[in-house]
Amino acid sequence: MEKEKKIVVPGDFLGTSEEFTPGSGVYDEKGNIYASLTGEISINDKRVIGILPKVGTPPMPEEGDVVIGRVEDIRDTVAVVSIACVKGKEKREIAASTQGIIHISNIKRGYVTELQHEFSYLDVVKAKVIDAKALRLSTEEKDLGVIKAICAKCKGDLKRKENALACERCKRVEVRKISEDYGKGVV
Ligand SMILES: [Zn+2]
Image (tube, rainbow, N blue to C red; front, side, top):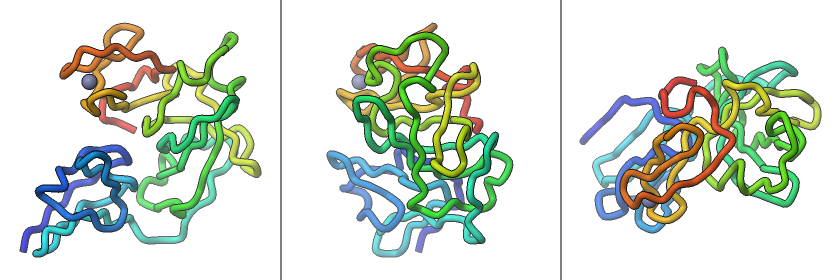
């Protein structure tokens, strides 16, 4: 029996499928297992790894709230974000299905031509709720945007290098709408 108590956020690398069997709150991508929820890691004696979300009444994000979520889909004009938690209310888990959207016009100041240059699948983003009903989010402010991202080629962690992100493993360089809190491990 092995137990670990560590809080992880969506997209955190947990281990490989050779080491663990994916349980709930995780996803397997090319043999690597990542957290899909914010919560505590749990590993049982059969090596099934899962995430235990914090239980409670799921708060609905309100206008002005800052939320943390993971980019689940990139379309022509919107990025779909699965909201993991509300800043300042981290102890209460958002309902797993809560999704917000970032419209291309709310990504940053100035004109965005390609949404794909600002966000990528599985990025962890910090965003502000600008419309609570439709769950529209904005990442215009400096501290908002991508706070964690993985390399599209090798799935390695991307490190900030001035205004771009670089993969230490394969040297690939990617661009994003980067939060000034990128890689600091704080939400
Ligand atoms: Zn890479």
